[in-house]
Length: 340
Figure 1 (cartoon, rainbow, N blue to C red):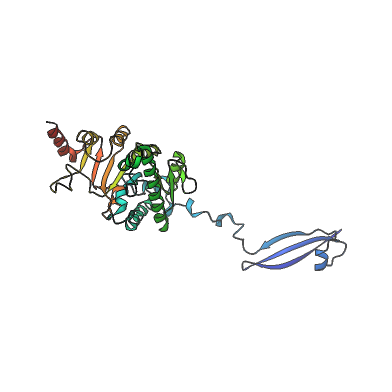
Figure 2 (cartoon, one colour):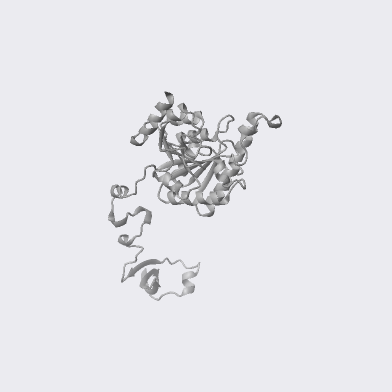
């Protein structure tokens, strides 16, 4: 049986290739196109390709890999991790009170406040800081204030307050996503149509992927404040600090609204907060932070830049921690004077 060959020039990506077509035949003539495409033809074709230049798809030295696996300037993995910017905290929990969302109190939610929060959170998440948020509901409904009114018991009033926090969370989520921040809302009780149920491992995974997680509905139980919920979630997701954003500059030794000469305390201990009965958080939240050694930063939400400063660890507001440093010596002496 004779084997005949034909060379067909083909242009692939501006490269001239020649396909060698061999087929067994009784004659040396090249069959026509109709013969190649005919089902009746018993012939088989053997195709090989040769080119004057190597194809980029066949050259292993010219393969392209995903950019995410390539380090800039030939750095190794260990060198790249060293060059990353370091901040005081890498995972934080931001507690936003409902009163702070109301702004000048002319409406329940001030869009300017929520947009300010979204922009500053966006600035720090782009730097690699993981941010979770617990939002209050006092701007819409505060259960402790309405308990006993028109026969409303405390448990029912607290559940209504939890629903108020969900409304704030959805509003804040919509504001963040409008500027491109991936956000997830998780509620303490199931509301599958509007938010995810709170699952600790899922929340941590969202944070690892760079998403902002907003925790709503408090702890899901009455008789607990959203400050306690913030301390609880902070401990559960292994956050390094709890940032309490309010409408005041921090913790004062007296009420600044009634005493203009009240002084801002830069540093406090958990014992100072409980012994001096400072209205920073409820005692349950303070105890949770103390037992889990979670520092608390109390600062003013309405001042531009305070959120990003607090998240990155800059000095702002009042720092509450277990041990006092050099800046807290004056506060310790104040507490000792008050005891005497």
